[in-house]
Length: 614
Image (cartoon, rainbow, N blue to C red):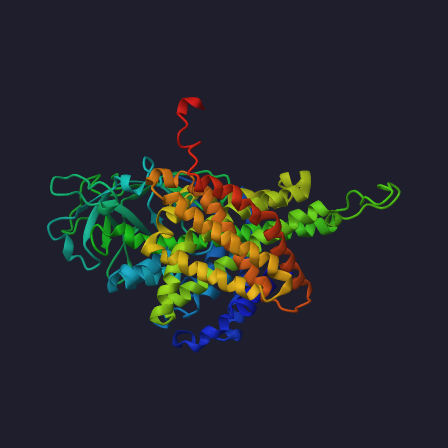
């Protein structure tokens, strides 16, 4: 079974994505146009990405003193991706888009993530431009977003700082008005930024003509002080090279300087940088035409309203979290396919019969051993289940944007609850799938002769970036399941119970239906008990076990919905999906009891331990 057949099944047989063509926005699309997009992306991924996955891992980006050097293969892959139109796939025709359902865009990008997540595609650039299309001015959309959609410019998100990390309330990058007439610039209120940003993916390269940084910074108050907390954060467009109102480069370099490249465990084909804003390396002309003094600051244009930066940035962050989950999923899938192929061809050992092992008999392929089947089935359950969840969430995005008011609001709330899961479950359990892929290969899996060790290294990042595992857990238990008086959790529960009711009509799934109903009840009980009379510190002390239990319940629901819908399909692929569903219910879902016990009891073993005890 190939990735393409899995994607086709999930899109068409399970999600019925072609039904979207009844909506005006997608009226031009059909099974044929969707297949054409998938064909194109599958071909580009096969020809321009997959053959160079090991190359970009070994030939890391390096700085020659003037510019960052990347392999030619990365330039070719970027060009092919940009020319495919995928950077603007879901955008309006008027801005060069295809008005493609986001569900199809996400599925198409899965091919690139599996071929080489390290080379990357356009997740940050698309997210950057999409944010500007919602929160930018008309000229900002034309000058910056449109150029990103074409691939002429690329984009980043600049949040973290060396001293702050994920604690955005502690950012110290400053943005001061650029003169008394700072609000008169056509591209938006013009500020000067000074500060440092860390962990900036694709922060410096020569793949595109320009790099558009979206930077979080604080505007000092009248006394020159930074406002504490996240309410004082604003968002700015800071181009690497200065751009005129006509979208053309002016020939000036903005005061954004590379301070260093981070050398990573994985994702080595993508530059990751420390950037200095306004250190004076590239002084910029003032609005009056004179040359400002060194250290005057990098030019930035305000996006939206002052102090509203974090709300604007969450538009990109939430999109990126779905993208991270999909990347983690496809790395898990890549490891699964590699270890499946290896297991089918590697002879080793003999099966134990009634008389024991007969050494005179030929060796069997390792896929015939029960424990190897266990490891392969676990990989399939984690990665294919995560892919189904990612595409389900993408379908909710389409519903939010094109459904009627009531359905759009339901989709919004479901996305709020599911976003921490679609990011966190794949990043933890598809990483475990990669570990199992190494195990299937045995000692060979630990060498660079086979690709699975790189898949594991690449995937290890996904539990960290775009919000660490702990941050996703606190977001879920501390905000998402409580928002609007728990309505999002209630809506999700209703969908889960609808699947349970459907499965109960099939005798082969009654046990799983009962188990899922019980798991949902445990989640509800744990949510109440965690917060009943508790301080936030007490309730959130075991947020990660809650996240793990919640994620397992969601994936169990997804698998049961898939399996119960197979009906009497007797194909090998259907048999495999039924087995993956049963595996997850019998081997993984029972784990949630232990996780939820510490949540319900508000166990303080970790929280109360003094540091000297370590």
